[in-house]
Length: 303
Ligand code: DON
Image (cartoon, rainbow, N blue to C red):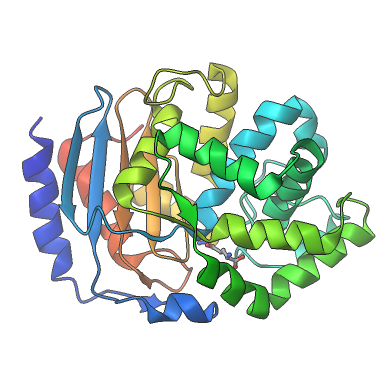
């Protein structure tokens, strides 16, 4: 299959889209990003890369980082992780709080904000220097030491992340945060501020398409663990739009409010899009269109 021509055609077509969404501004620093940015990167199973547009420009990966934190925590803690966070789709926005009260402090899944805060807490309990050790984990997965946090984005969210502060305190009141709430929030805001390009994200997420082995061939998770995280991405990666993403695109994936989307087809490829304008559910409007076109044109969805 001529992936390059497919990407070029999709890029040209989606770039003209009138349905471009709105850039997130509830984290003030994200509101400064140029809404016309658009990039696509595909890494196939033979590690050959294909790109279009702004595929090498770094952006704030935000919630996409939750999958990487989950994978590090799952590797360290094993199946006990599921005692503290469930694996059911929430059908609610990523920052919704009432379910947490109803379900006694056990978040529906690790990809909504409350679940990701519990994962941060688990990592803090395991790691000596959580921020640095998590960064090293991501660098090692990507085989790229230039990956880093964006200090400005982290500080910007720290000043305005009131709902996350509320969620962390509610979790603490149910006993599902073991460390200091302020340490958990600080780690979470830094984790979300990771700045990466489409290409760097594809290299990092390659192991989800490669039975747990990273681009250098080192095993980070076993096949059973990879199956479980891919399943969680499919059912929970897009919050109250997870059904729509599975219906239109048909791949496990994860979005972030920085406008990135990562999607994987086990043993076939990993694809990443970046377009900062978000739809009403907080997922990249043009990214969804590009990925729907990609799996429709190539026939390469998991279904
Ligand atoms: O906690 C937040 O609100 C952000 N740091 C991350 C949210 C996010 O990316 C949701 N994804 N679509």
